[in-house]
Length: 491
Image 1 (tube, rainbow, N blue to C red):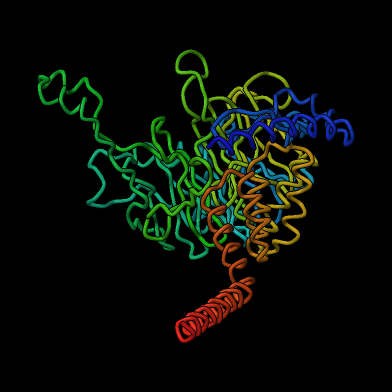
Image 2 (spheres, one colour):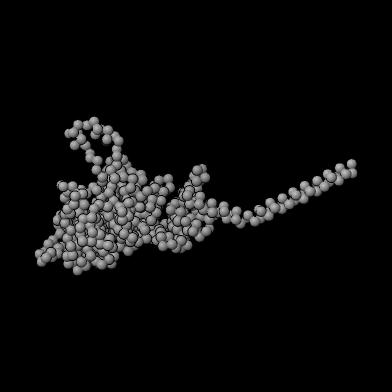
């Protein structure tokens, strides 16, 4: 432990020097114009300064687009073809932008068997590779599916099932669909999980039911309380999901509204089991250090999540207006954003998505989208993670070394280099970087391999030496015994 502490101090010292040099030589000092500080958490869970990975690149509003101001928009979605769909909730319309963020069209309604119908406060969107648009038409309590031309395909209305409570009112707020056209809906008051509908729109059940967390103190008080007191006390009910997204393999990424859950982000397999990889220094949960009381207090509250093809996923914290990005293993890569009124800050962030290398964040109260552009530092991290995800560890290690030039305090970079070296069989170097990356498991594995290499390399010489020593000992013993016998004979 003492030796690791020495490494830690060394890294901190080097970090300050390299960070200052990197900022000065690459223009990253200009990132100081960003209205938030760059930071990350080290192995010990302490916040440490870090270069800014994303900086605000501009804002988009209904006024700048020339279509009238947005009113309390609740969702945005970047389609596979780069079009950006915005649920302009207060105006009950869907705004479609081209990849260059200019207006393509507005969708205010559709024809249903010849009758014109309109949306009512839509709050959720999802677009497939073929351009089919799913709309959580919240005010009308239905899911609307339109084709790429805006023609109605199907309407999913309040499901009927024995597993639903008698007083359940279908109020969809978020929606997603997989390649098999199964539809996943986050609905208000659906505490049993995410509602799943088959390709024909029939209700199939719940996915990823949140478990009820047993509190023995609450249980004790409820056991001695009167009926009236029990009614006033909080019920033992699971928590609601807040959003959903799908990765390329069809796994469901979710966020939920439980402030005390140890798993605010989940990755559900087809059976609803959480299989999110949590192999980082701590589980993906947003801020590790936060105020317990006052404004902005409490753990991060995730309201949206986006997952990319390279395993990188970003989650939006509505409590403090921050975006947390993790790699496939759950390592925290970077953090940016905060609450405020400046460009690059938020009042009520509600949705995020990626458009190429940029990240778009929708603010409901400001009625605008902020486009964040990756800095050189952020681009290096994204590239290193992407290369590792695709199995190109040699190039990944090279990029991680560049990352260290800007942030020598970034433990994940050392870990990335260590993993790459380990796969290349460079075990001694891998062990050294694993120690810098504070990963005992990889350090142990690399050191064991290195020890075997040393033994294998020198085993022949060692055995020869042992054999020679044994031979010499035998000869010496033979000569000594012969000398003794001669002495006895002459005597």
